[in-house]
Image (cartoon, rainbow over all chains, first blue to last red; front, side):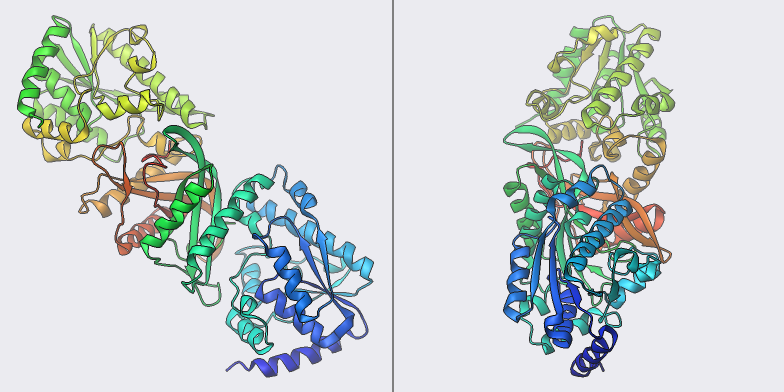
Amino acid sequence: MFDSKEFIEKSIKEIRKTVGENKVISACSGGVDSTVATVLVHKALGKNAVAVFIDDGLRREGEPEFVVKTLTNIGIRNRFVDAKKEFFEVFKGKVDAEEKRKAFRDKFYKKFGEVSKEEKIGFITQGTIKADIMETVGGIKSQHNVLEQIGINPESYGYKILEPLKELFKPEVRKVARELGLPKEISERMPFPGPALSLRVLGEVTAEKIAIVRKATQIVEEETKELGVFQAFAVLHNDKATGIKKGKRVYGNIVTIRIVDSQDAVTARASQVNYEILKCICSRITTEIATVVRCLYDITDKPPATIEFE
Amino acid sequence: MFDSKEFIEKSIKEIRKTVGENKVISACSGGVDSTVATVLVHKALGKNAVAVFIDDGLRREGEPEFVVKTLTNIGIRNRFVDAKKEFFEVFKGKVDAEEKRKAFRDKFYKKFGEVSKEEKIGFITQGTIKADIMETVGGIKSQHNVLEQIGINPESYGYKILEPLKELFKPEVRKVARELGLPKEISERMPFPGPALSLRVLGEVTAEKIAIVRKATQIVEEETKELGVFQAFAVLHNDKATGIKKGKRVYGNIVTIRIVDSQDAVTARASQVNYEILKCICSRITTEIATVVRCLYDITDKPPATIEFE
């Protein structure tokens, strides 16, 4: 049986031992993993820890503000970096999923490298958990925060990596979050991928497409928040399809709704959501987003699908 | 109240009056519309009518053989034209839905023009129904068999068009089919678009992609044949997504399952199909078709979507 109190004590000691007198930056996205990692480092090192939120332009509605407010409330020193334009720049012309992930990862680490130099830090903390490492080593995906596992030397970016949660699975991370007294919005927060909405826009990522999938994501989350599912989100296709808006034929966007039940993201089941809820989501998306003519529901388990589309 | 017996008598008289001593080719795809039109012309003109089946390579599994056998059983003189290679040739490099429709239509009429010259005929019969005309005039889609309505002069292709069903809606056509004593496989046959599977492959149409969507279509039809739905089919996306096959990450195909309830195809509802049936279809498609990692279910009514994707 996992003892979250014991884990926290042990983790704090280990962080102190590893880091010594160095300063540490914590990359906090607002998700449960990275926030728990950030709080652990803060508890271990106090003012030697600074949390950084990089706004890559790919976040959910209101998320950047929420993360900064949360960190401030806990008393963690934090920096907000607006890098929206730079991220959209690196996505230009890239349509392949793996190319997009690599472009994101590279930009993400370069940006952190810049901040880490300014702060004169020696370590960067990330919320990598066990499932991320298993899947990266197994070749399922190249997770953006498991550089060491895939043979990239993080020192070439100017710092060492600290991953205090890499032995934990998601339910254990949530237990630690509760034990740390984090608000429910964090401890029970739905998983959200590192490269965020960029994985939920098939094909080239642009600011316009991100705006569409952000709005669709908001609708899906609003309509499913009572369901207690593991993850619920929207994906914008690159393919288009015919539809009818205001009596006229249009060639419009396709959005897929993805809702899954899972314990640890290693396997997952497509949720059997009440059909009326799905119809309501479909109706809202095709009404509130002018360009969308069609909503699809992903009925595939993992495996053979993955939870995310890229 | 529509009287199918009266319609048949009136229609036969009109066909005789319009056609006179000319010979007529009937374009028969095996669907209820074109088969009813073919039988009416056969009844009106006897040996002056010949049915032609053009195999465009875009038909369902076993369909070409089925159509020829059906026509022969009824005693209708028929010709089978293998044009598979020519059709795949015209699709090369075309990704836009309307361009694909136009390419298909042009090839279709040219092919018929060739046969009509060989047969020295003056008229070509098509199974155009009222919904096709309404939607073409309304700008919903450019139906391949309503040339006159969209301003194309069919005489430039070498013949005149005969459309004996253009005042009927689908349920009336089915009544006429029953009155004519056609087998149930025809009278209750699911609608299938003129350009066939080419509309169900998003992006460029190739023989390989048609093979995938043909297999997926067969699975959907097998698993839904007891449901009595208006239409049930599969669509192959051009977009790809990540999945896991044999424990390895793959970047695979996405198939959408589309099942709708409708009276006349002018409006339609996405069917609320039993979830176990959908899961079974998904499991079969991702197992029996090696490249497919994900199945989506289209939950959008018409409007705002259309029944087909293109």
